[in-house]
Amino acid sequence: MVVECLSTSEYIFAIWKLIIRPPRRRYTRLELSGPYPSRFRVGGVVSIRNDFIIHNSRGLSLSCTLFEPEQSSSEKACVVYCHGNASCRLDGFERIHALLPLNIALCCFDFAGSGMSEGDHVSLGYYERDDLSAVVDHLRERCGFSRVGLWGTSMGAVTTLLHAARDPTLAGVVADSPFSDLWGLIQEICSSKVRLPHMAWNPVLQGIRMMIQKEANFDICEVSPIAHVDSCFVPALFLHGAQDDFVLPHHSEDLKKAYQGEATYIVMPDTDHNSARREKFLARSALFFVRAFRWEQFVDPAAMTAIMDGLFPTMTNQQKCMQARVDCRLAALGHLPQTAVSSEICNMVLSADTSECHRGVLMAAAELSYAYRGSEILALEQNGNAAPRSKLPALFKGKLCFGSEDTELSFSWVAGKVPRSGEYCIFFVVISPRVLSLSRMLLKIKSSAKSYTTERGVELLSIEEVQLPLRKQLDFELRIPTASLVEVVVDGNFLGSGETSAKLEPQKLIEPFCWCWRAAGDSVLDARLSVDTTAPESPQCHNRNSGSSLKGATQQEKLAGELATLCLGTRSSLPLHHLDWPVANEQ
Image (cartoon, rainbow, N blue to C red):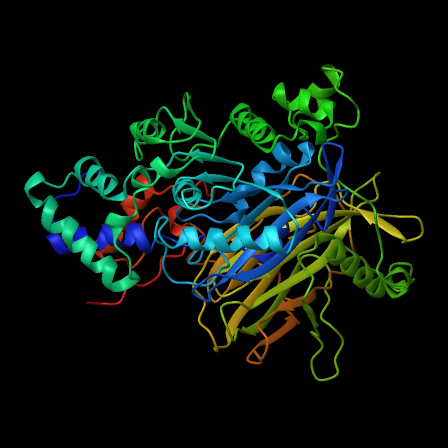
């Protein structure tokens, strides 16, 4: 990237936005559920999850998820994962296969200003350490964890070091790609990424510093882990990518040298700042926590052996585990059969009426997915008419209205059955003011509808970030050309699944079912749907062929976007134009 002929104020805006107003990683409750329901098995360990909300010292809500072994020993250990800039708690879910087989719980949360948590700004560690402190206190006081460790990436790694300096009771810290000093990092960005002339550094840096102090109420010169690690005595493992050209490896080297306690530094070859971390480094980190927790007596030897060999209990590694003759208890991630919560659902699934049966299947899927807990069912019947249903190809049209950004709607339906296995194929379209997503679940029902299970949980097929207006009637189209192909249009925004690989025996009639999550007291919401007999055509919408630029963005915002593409510590699979940039106040 070459940036020329920009004013000082434009440089200040771009870097200021990069620091405290990066693109926010949005996701839906269904994406949050993913393949991990309320109870699942990983590596032979039956585990449970709990999504909860706490508040930080500033009164902002923090959205958290805890995964822990169902059968806990007399001692309980937990690792808290801290995500990077422009990221969210979902990144931490990659650590489930590394920690839970070792009987170590994992807690992931969204920092204030990120994901589903409240807040407008991030601070690259300054306020995030207080968020982390609130989570650690909750785990100790409310959940009974006597041993707590921290695992952070980029901004999250900085946060773990800042918190460790004031909490000597921690068992250990894994810091992946931290910077040693924010002021120094910004100078490096000005020099290498923005290519700002050396003589212009001081006015730009001072302008950024004052703007952040005014907008976010903290001094970037105080975000300096290297000024705190000389008082850290907690064992630490530093990881850094050899090809990291944003936060250069010398940052971790400098921190390791200045660290007062026991510290180890590992360079990850062929790895940059945003690369997915290879399993052997995740395994190395997990084994570090076993040692830091003094946890050997609580770990299944088979699980320890497999993870030492880099064989995580994943579907990909299942064959390798078999070839290595690893203990059969080290199984891949799998859902446990669940019992329907009510006889009503059982009776619905067994009903001779297809519509009633499908409604029962969808309710069973909702129970298993975990994401639908706390949701309500919205009736799509209008003026006494029956709920909309259609033969394939199907086209449904309707109107939507959202009362708040926290509101989500989900339209789900039974698309068909998988031959031989008899699994029901269920599609979910989730719509919120900020995100559109398409997901699928294959659900198998056994024992006269008394138990049901899914091998892969909720599979995300497609997702788009959007900006839908609130308290306004929006046009909505749901296009289902075939049993395995779905297209959605909301207020001109398009999302398509692409033809899925599953071969289905299609249902004769498609009948969508509507779920809703909304904040208490939010009554401004409407969802109407009707059948259009016109054959679905390929829609022309402004998200279908999105380019890499920010449409309608100013020169300043384009620069901020280009900087984020190069610099942001995020491993999100979403392209830049699918991330949510807050609108800055004009100065």
